[in-house]
Length: 470
Image (cartoon, rainbow, N blue to C red; front, side):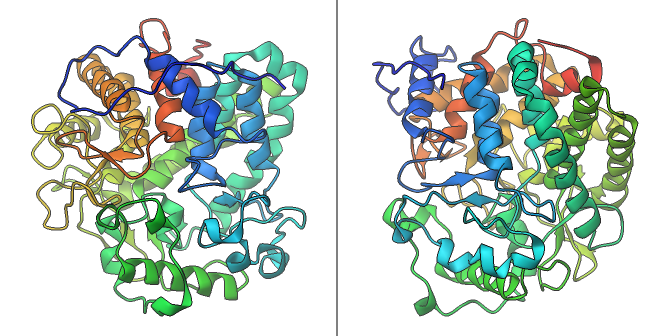
C-alpha cells in the first residue's frame, strides 16, 4: 500500500489565535505527520488516546485531506468504512478495531452488541460497530477523492464499488429517518448529529431519564479535562438513549429523541449533489439524486428556517416545535449552492454578527451562540470552535462569492490549527487548545485548505455543481 513518508518535522507549538496570519512553513509537514501517526493500516483514528477506533464523519473529512498526500490511502479510508455498512443501508458511526482493549473506549463493542442486536437490520457479522449513524458527508468525500486522481480511481473501480453503497445509505436516511413526515431526516441521538453536547439538545434531552452512573464507566475523562467534556448527567442521558435504541434492535421511529437538524440535512443535500456527479461519471442516471437535493433544500427552508434568528434552527420532532437555541449547525446550510440569495445574505450577517462574532470578537466561528447563557468557551460543543464546521463555513462563504471573508476565515483556521497543535477544538476567543491534540480531521482539513486549488478559489461544491475538476 502507498504510504506517506514519515516526517521529522515537530508539530507546531500552541499559541493564541490572534497571532500572525501567515501559516508557518512547517504546517503541511506537521499536518501530514499527524495523519501518519493516526494511521492504522486501513483507516485513520481521530486521536490515538481519546478515540482509538474509526469514526464515520471523521473518516470522510480525513479522506478529503488525505487525497492531497495519497489518493490511494484516501480511497482505502473510505472503503474500510463502507465495508462495515449494515444491510439496511446505514453506515455506523463507529467501526471498532478488535485489537483495542474494551476498556479503552466507552461505549465499547460489548455495549452495542451490533451483530446480535442489529441482526434484523443487517449488521455485519465479521466486524463490530455501533448502531447509530453520523452526518452523511461520505458521497462528497468519495467524489473529491476521485477528483484527486481520476486515473487511479477508475483503474481501481473506486466509484463503481462505492456508488451502490452510497445510494443505499441515502435511501436508508430518506426512507427510515423521515420521522417528522416533512421530507427531512431526523437524528435519534445527539451522537448522530456529531455535535454531541450542543445546548440545542438540552430541551429534548430533558425528557430522558439518565442511566445510573454506576452502570457505565467514562473512558473519555482519562484523556480530557472534565471541564472540557460533557457532564455526568448529560452522559447518562446519552447512554440511556443508546441502550434503549439497542434494546429495540435498532429499529427507527420508536425513541423519545428525534430532531431534524440543519447541518445533518445540509450535508445530505451536498452529498446528493455529489452522488449525481458520481452517477454521471459511471454513466448511470443522475437526475434522481439532483432532484432529491432540490426537494431537500426546499424542505430545509420550509421547516427549519427562522427569519427572526437569521439562521436555521433544529426542530424537536417529538414536541412538534423548533428549538430556539442558536448552534453552529444552523449556519452550515450556507454551503448549499441553491440556497435562496436572501437566506445566504442573512446567514453571512449572522456569522459575523454578535451571536457568533466572526472577524470581531472571534477568529473562528464558535459552536454556540456567544450571547446564550449556556455558552461555554471550553466545554465540548457548547461554545468552542471546531475545525470541521469552520471548514464547511469557509467553503460556503467562498461558494457564494464572499471571497474576502472566506480568505480571512481560511487564514484563521490555518493559524489556529498549527498554533494549537492540531487541537480537537479551541477556545473561540483565544485559540487555546481543548480536548485532544494531534486530531485527525484538524490536520486533514488544514492540508485541504493549504492545497492550491487555483488560488484556493475552487471547492467541492463548485466541483459538484459546476464541473470543476481541480
